[in-house]
Length: 322
Ligand SMILES: [Zn+2]
Image (cartoon, rainbow, N blue to C red; front, side, top):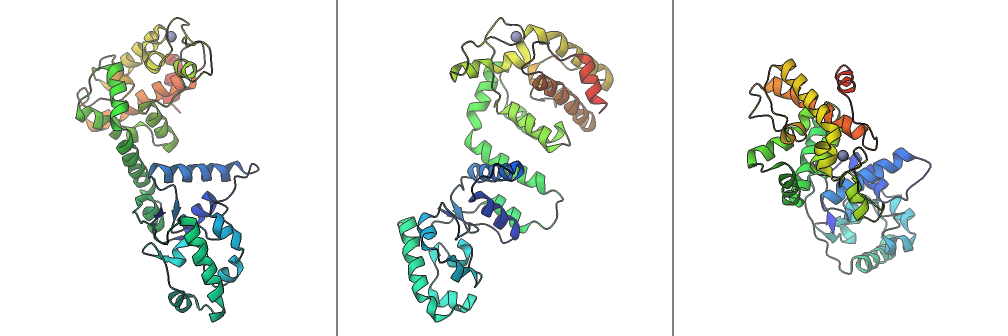
């Protein structure tokens, strides 16, 4: 499938990376490659796009066989968007006009046509819009850019996994109505100014952590007991909330939050883990401050994930001051 993207050098550079071989020497390079491929996958655009490179692209096996990139490249024909229009290979006459190709390129064109047909088993390609690609292509400044990317990707993600995650949380913390569920996702951006930290909250919501229970189910360890209390099944809700070794921590955190912000919130997993605050804290700025404070409290549990001891109130207070 060929996906449509906006115009611009950023998608072109990212796509060049996406189709390149991983390079162990450069971890940053590999990270960008992974993130971009994940970004495409989330949008269900994990095939070729307008900006997929035509040449030196090992995944485009039929074209790779040709080794005629040189002739085309010297005329600026380097990416799928240069030879395709509306999902079809453009006629040679069009390409000659646009790229000033000599008539001697007819043979190369026929080779290209053959390779494209062999690759796609059809000369027709389906087009679909991909908002993040367009956003990247149209990006003129960094202001609001991350939030927009984030909102688009989240929307895709939710579209794919909406019910399962909610059902699992409701089994653990009780029923959540539509407004509360919406607040949980809106609260992600209030958790922290740091994008990486916001991702941590998303990971919690989407329950991506490897708990002892999950590791046992995956056959990676023999038992599933909680690392801290060593008593029961270490599933997510136990490790974040129900573990007896966390009770003191959560009650001290909540009592501090209530007294510092002048609010009166219950020690409840919906509040502490998911940030359902609207019914307890009316004022928006206070709510955002509480959201950040509670996020740091749960983040500390993540930091102590494999530790036998729970986090302490002191550590949490120290994090607040950072
Ligand atoms: Zn435990």
